[in-house]
Length: 194
Ligand SMILES: Cc1cc2nc3c(=O)[nH]c(=O)nc-3n(C[C@H](O)[C@H](O)[C@H](O)COP(=O)(O)O)c2cc1C
Image (cartoon, rainbow, N blue to C red; front, side, top):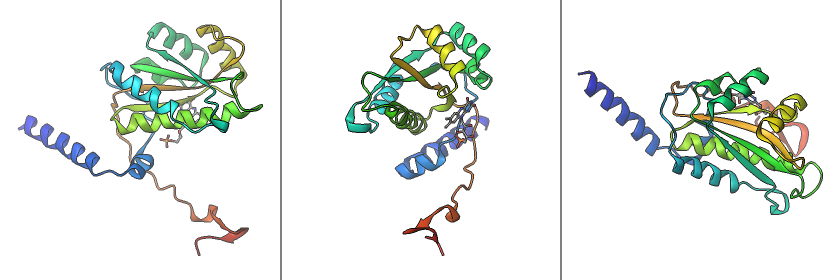
């Protein structure tokens, strides 16, 4: 009986997913901080990195590097210096998105480009059934210094964001975030939605 129930709920999840449009993936993505013990296969990590590398970037400079981490000693060291990274304890992997100051289009562009990369990874993770959470590094100098030291990053490489990853052990409802009042029409203060 339990097995039948499990199979039918799994089938429901699969059918719902098959029915989802790319915009549904964007809207149903949530920060997932609880993971099962299952390790993410290497091909899926590669797919996430590829998704990151297909992000838009200013003048197509692609000023990024990635550090894939699955060493739990390193996770423990990050948790010790980062107040909001406890979910790494149960993570399978984390990807540190880094900016390359030598490759960026102009001063400060690496930050914008790396934001697009990070979101691509989060969305790709959700779309293949993984749970992920953005762990903020930039612009907190103490976190950046700690990661730079821990992972031996060279001077011209800036740690931007850490994405914790695993198979989800929690489900989250989609909140209502659509805020018509934030949308203006042609001029500031003229509402787009009447
Ligand atoms: C720049 C940035 C930094 C964040 N840093 C953390 C963090 O350090 N730890 C954490 O648990 N979540 C972090 N988050 C995730 C946010 O808390 C989360 O995106 C927000 O609460 C909205 O929830 P949602 O992602 O489920 O839509 C960060 C998100 C962003 C964009």
